[in-house]
Length: 68
Image (cartoon, rainbow, N blue to C red; front, top):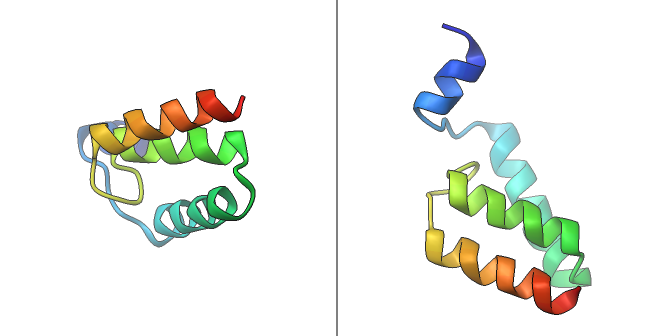
């Protein structure tokens, strides 16, 4: 089983995904950067670095649309 297949079966919280998640939160809060918002939405929708939260992912997609 490849790492990709394992990742798709169950999202594993690694130090790297968690740090990337935290960095994107900081960038979003400080700058409102659209790519950071979109990446956070992806993290929430796929459970990468955090628990899956579809409501939060949807709210972030709306925030990205509002910013531009």
